[in-house]
Image 1: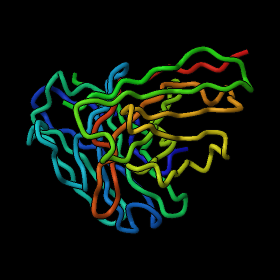
Image 2: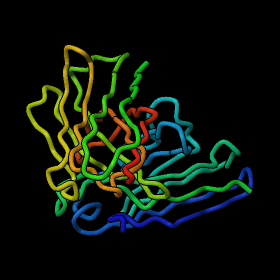
Image 3: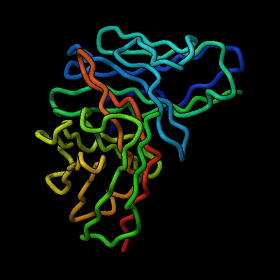
Length: 111
Length: 121
């Protein structure tokens, strides 16, 4: 059971927009800890997509964005492309567990 | 560019030990904290351990109950994970990742491709 809850899957047609939610609690996201997002293709190295809620590392396109409010955060992908098909994870810190925690993961399918 | 290459995985019996390594290149290794993260088959990512840049601090996921030890050799640009009393639930892909500092919580800014660990009788 993951501390951060994400929908198991989302899907969209090429060019569409999809959004992935990440719901936490008062000991992690709600406590003010930042949320970070990763893209993971099985068999490859996970890739940092968003850090500190809404910041993109160099090389990540601006059609990918993040936001945070209260005990939740969201990742949005606009102009969906075939290459976006992957698993996506949110991550934060939990003060009760005293450790880094990940979301349950969301599989994005491009129809 | 940043390169992290894990090694040392394999198939082992329950109750035995294994040491994983992560060779780092493309950045000043001694200036960065480093993590281990794992992914069990069909499951999500799970943080395992963190070590400070100079090795002065180590932090672990509570679920490990003292069985794992993270260490580093800055002269060899290498990170280690000593895993003892292995259990079937320790099976999975183990990734090393570089620490990224945030004002309100750290993250993992570069990752290796992982090494597979299978614990089975």
